[in-house]
Length: 179
Length: 226
Image (cartoon, rainbow over all chains, first blue to last red; front, side, top):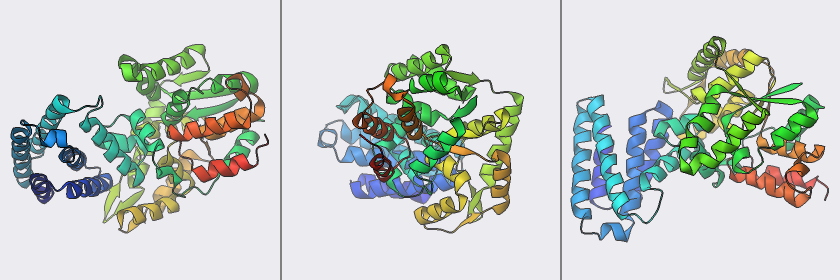
C-alpha cells in the first residue's frame, strides 16, 4: 500500500495523466479481489487526479498550485499511515485527500456531477467488469447502485460473451413456468 | 399463481425505462406475484425518494408497491439466517492466492434468501455475476482468471452447497419479461404493439443496465414477426 500511494503521488506531481489512469484501473481490480475499500479509495483518487490533470481550466487556475500541494501532503500522510499499518489514520488521510479533491472540483468544475462521484462510478464499473456483483462493486467504492447500473448499461461490458443461456431459451422457460 | 422474486437490478431497469407497469399487467392477466425483499424497497424507495435526482424512479416503485402489483416481503429471522448462510457460501466460493474473493454482497444474498424462504423457483435479476455464479460457476472462474491474470481456485464444496441452497432455479432478466409481455399482449397496454416498440423497449432495458448483449437482442428479434 505505501508504495502504491507513493507511485500515485509521484505521478500526480509530474502530471502523468496516463499513469494515473492506469493506476486507478489496476488498483481497483486488486481492490475487487481483496475487498479492500481503502485501496478502492486510492483508485478513485487516482481517477480523479487523472481527470483533473487533463483539464486546462483546473490546471491553469491560480488556486490549483496550493490545492495540488495540499493533496500531495495528504497523500504523503496517507503513505506514512500505511507504512505504520495505522488503518484508521490511513482512512482519515484518504478521506482528507478526497475532501480536497471535492473542494477544488466544486469550485472550478463546469458539471453538476462532480469528479469524485464520477470516479466512484467509473471505478466500480471496472470492479463489476472484473467479476464482482453490482451490489458488491457499488459497495467497494461507495457508488450509487442505480447510477452504477446506468453507467454500465452505456458500456460494452455486457457484450462480452459469458452467458450460455440465450434470451430465447430463458423466454421459453418463462413461458413454461407461467402458461 | 407464479411467484417471481425480483432483484433490485431489474427494478432499476424497469423503472428507468418506464416499463414497470408491465408487471401490473402480467399480474392481472397471468396471475404472477412479483415480490421484492424489504432491503430492495428501502434501497429503491425509502432512501432515494429524498434525493431529487432519484425521486421520480423512487415514486414509480412506491406506486407499484401501493398499487399492489409489487409486493414487499419483510426480512424475517429465517431470511436473515439464510442470508448469513448464503453470504458464507459466497465468501468461500473461490480463492486467489489462498485468499477468498467475495463476489456478491448482502443485497443479492437477500434476494436469494427470499427465494429459499418463499419456495419460489424463479428470480428476475439483471446483473450478471449472481446469475453466473449459480448457472455457470466454472465459467465465472475462467472469467476471473482472464480478468485478474491469476489462478482462481473454485471451491467445489461451496458450489455444491450453493446448488443445494438455491435448488432448481430459473433466472430471467427484464428483457425476457418485456418479450413475454409482448407475446401476451400486455406490452401493448404500455406501448403500441409493434416490432419497433419491442426493439426500443429491449434496447432501453439494455441501456438501463440489463446484462444482455446486442447479439442476444438481435438474435431474438430475428424471429419476431412484424
